[in-house]
Length: 296
Image: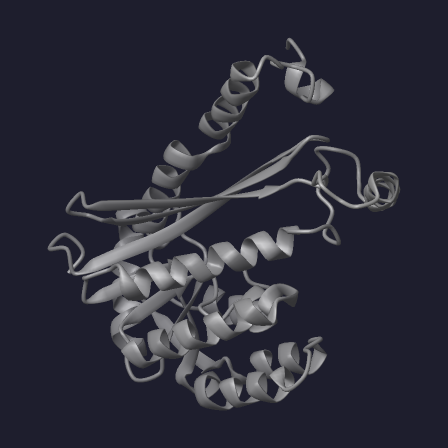
């Protein structure tokens, strides 16, 4: 299945350039298969505080200064700021799952992380993102032939059970319904969205199986998510992919998708493009931070 092209894997990366002049966030997605097929997609989001043309320029400047006073220093991540880390993760997670669903032609699709992550279940504060995510996630779950493998999970009980497995054994432990209900119960939704999120959990939660496997004698326990009706096939797909790097016990195709994403959309290429734009406009270093111009 792996080398015949019946599995495609998607992963994404995000990088931000934050200065006083403008904040640019790039989100990149790569879809790959072992037959060498690759699809690379990206989107850049721009934030500028100042717009010229207000009827009262003095009041506009005062409002601008007040907004900037509440922001962090340039180059510092702030989870409360516009397009926060959670928001970027939410957009990237949505793009990964939409790409697996609508741009992949493989029988099986593999993703990185939880198929119903926190940032999508809450909408990352955006009900528009929540609405789009619900449509994509319901369709992806109905497709059934998917498996998601996270790099880490908070559930130490699941990892403890996994540590007791022999190599090439797996255990299907429970569904995602309980954890999803906790997220929705603690979420901050506007209008009727809380009830819509609850209905989504009612439909999808019981269909998400959570399990754990061990690929090799020296590899750690690895959690995975799959559809309850295809969980045994999904476990074998994940273990087979993980056996290609037995020392890690983690799917090689996810590592390849991540490497492709970082090569095409990583920080180096992105910063070079931004720096080139500054130079084109005659300001090569004026808006860069001290760390960005540090010689060593």
